[in-house]
Length: 336
Ligand code: NAD
Ligand code: UFG
Image (cartoon, rainbow, N blue to C red; front, side):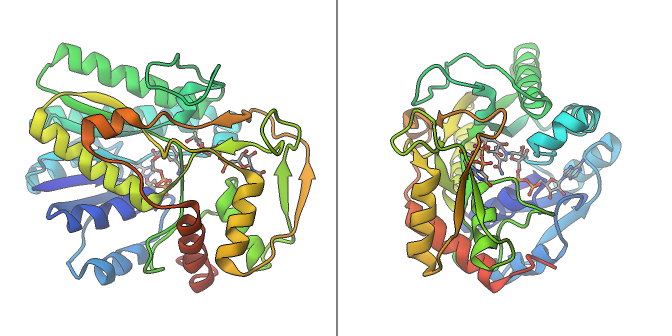
């Protein structure tokens, strides 16, 4: 079964490629490499032992995407392609609305043209904004606090409208919590451009002395140690969640929206300690002010995914840290 992965050369897409091959499916990558490197393709070949099929181009090019869908006889699409930096989306909102919403519209029109109606979409826990309580269930109210989050909300709504208008469409909306870690081979992982915005890549760069210390954003939150609590999920667990989701769409044909998280929250300082234990390195840090827009706690109620998909995350925080460290220490400059 051929599955198109838009943005398949990126962090989550590349790990999902491996899981799809492991599950006996044939993934095809579509990527313009605006935030990834072609070197990932050789790494994927090395991990899977299979040829890697990649179409280089832009998801905004509807006619070309339709040709790709037809040429590879694609049965279903996993749509990862998009921009994801919250701060950048505040500074350059049109860049985000154009690529993320425009990209989703373009892809869906191409799918319509090619007669493909099975789609898994990368949404985010960001659609819950500042939740009133935790853990967060799928039926909690949605809100957005920045243009990036707004694009995810709008795309979720577009998918819903399309399903209502065309009941043959089968859509899985997956709301990821905080993906971290890397494939245990150390060959693929997260490779942010410039100064990392996210906690784990920042910590791994501090461990390599590429940055002097971690700034902990806030130590006065109403959490056990005062630092922010998140639901960190190993990217390989997340990847396997996508395989379970696309299989469920093919098997049951029912559309659904599900959280992909572990259901467990960890504070910033817990992550620092787990990383120190996994790497044997000390992580110097400084407690600082809160980062604007951050919430105190965000973790999933992960039971729906287990019920619907028979999937749950199994890898520990320790494994997330060990795998993130293996990737970063073997590839201090990422894919470059
Ligand atoms: P990433 O930037 O590593 O991967 C995205 C890929 O899409 C990149 O390879 C990029 O080159 C490609 N791309 C972007 N615009 C494109 C376009 N117009 N045409 C073709 N390719 C294009 O990001 P990721 O971390 O792998 O995230 C994948 C998806 O998951 C994104 O939609 C993101 O919003 C979502 N998500 C990520 C996180 C996270 O923390 N990483 C959390 C929640 C949701
Ligand atoms: N943090 C620090 N120092 C840093 C970076 C982060 O203390 O240098 C803290 C944050 O304050 C937060 C925690 O570490 O408490 C996690 O922060 P991240 O930036 O790694 O992740 P966020 O939860 O803020 O956001 C991420 C993605 C969003 C996505 C969200 C939910 O960046 O796009 O997870 O999926 F919406």
